[in-house]
Amino acid sequence: MASKIVLLVALLLLPSLLKAQNSKPSFSVKISLEKSVYDFGEEIKSTITIKNISEKKDSLDNNELYDAFGNNVYLFRNLDTVKCFKIMVTTEIATFKIFKPYEEYIIETYVTGTCSNLPVGNSFQYTILDTGLYTLQTCISKKIGFDGSNYIHQKSSSNAIKFYINSPNENEKKAFLELGEIVSYTLEQFRDTVYRLNVLLKLDEFIRENINTYSADIGYLAMSSLSTGLRSYENDFIELSEFYLLNKPNGRQVSIALLAIYKSFFKETHNKDRAIEKIENYENNYPNTRLEKESIKLIQYLKGQKEN
Image (cartoon, rainbow, N blue to C red; front, side):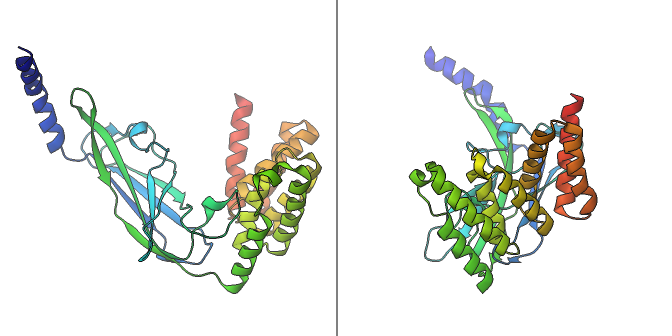
């Protein structure tokens, strides 16, 4: 009797299973890069295009776009003598978006990952890609059926793109190695506020002297976490943030510097409107830069908060 019930259930599920297996993909995804060769430390911006290739409205479920770690873009380092080190890069995605027939959705994201044995410090390793050949790919999937205990997923992979990162020039290499020495501290040393302040002062000097290098961006990112909660360095960090924005309006850490300046000015004035005006000055004085774009985004967010 039990075997008959199992057979009956299997027969009932079989049509849906066959339909799911034979169904055509309703979405496509492709990924592209601006070029195939990059300088060491240069930003790598990728463009992901998701398209509804069906004749009806459809959507992708949020939990079907990410893996267990919240990632959906994959980066591989291609080495002849070393096994590829797989890196997962988190990106913005079309969460629960309703796609019209043949509608496209475009996402731009920067490629980052710890894919090397570079001698870096403790707080910014994920931003660095070493010299070498890499492969970039992404994928999407959606539920298309149920087998009685688990959902059936339809996965669509993008094209795979290869790109190469050149060796650093002498100036970048020197700055990078110097930065590595400054931030090579232990957890015990990090907990020592006197030692941490000394590291911050070294980083401050390093960034000012090497502002035109990629390592200055990494150093500033390290400082943003190192200076948290260290009141003796708060004012110095704001001065450095202003220096960073003035001298590197297209820098990678512009958004972090802007937010730090806004919070500091708001804390000083207790006036949100005046603090927003401070950010508006950056928007107006740095047209066609990342600083302008990030200022606009921050202002929109702050004004939206104010309205709510």
